[in-house]
Amino acid sequence: MTARWDGRALSEGLLTAARQAVDSGIPEGGRPPSLVSVHTAGPSPYSFYLRHQARAADRAGITFRDITLAEDLTAPTLREVMRALDAEPGVDAVILEHPLPPQLGFFSAVSALRIEKDVDGVGAASLGRLLAGQPVHVPAVARGAVKLARHHGASFPGRPVTVIGRSETVGLPIALLLSVRGLGADATVTLAHSRTPDLAAALCCADVVFSCAGQPGLLNRGNVPEGAAIVDVGLSNVPDSTAPGGQRAVGDADVADLEGWARAVTPVPGGVGPVTVATLMESTVLAWDLLGRGKAL
Image (cartoon, rainbow, N blue to C red):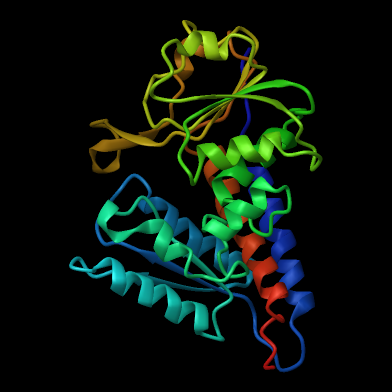
């Protein structure tokens, strides 16, 4: 029997704790935390993430605002948008949704934020602190994925773990978070990616697999070792005439094929996603705390 490492109960607990921190922490003359999400127009596999951010912020007592970027936006203008939010005293946390069109220069734009406001931890300074083992904010997907695995009993010190995917915002941060000395990590990490010639060989000894490839059906009995747990971070839309809009969200794991073979699989949706959103709210409360809890200085 393959266990389902669901993330919804953990998410609820994290949001409750965040709300308690907000309600008990607003100083006289202060205000609640404020989060701004900056994103492009139009649908994507991640469109639902924005809706869940708004709901989770409301649950946590966080003021939420989203900014839709103009379709003809240029990279210099995007940097100005980020600099303006960085300078705005009523904003504690900013997340720049990705992926963005390459010409907009995601890393240049997000690195315009001071480290306290880079709530998704994906700017140059934030990633550098993570590499040094002294993170301020950790990318929400990476932190949420590792937090979910730990919640369901995964132990990492010394254990073999494989991460599939090397994006600077998801795969690499997960590998760093698992590799860093202390912090309950210290895993023995293998990093596989699109140029890995033999995925089964890269996975052969893994106790836990974190998959961030965005390739439906990538993981099956042919490459996953028996008894491994899969934390499925992949997200794709596939045609489904029975689903609203004719599409449904799926991860990288072929869940039907892995039933009875894998020790555990995180569902998509309902696994890493809810924990990622709750972790983002946790980080927003931290940013608010670091910046003075909304108190006029």
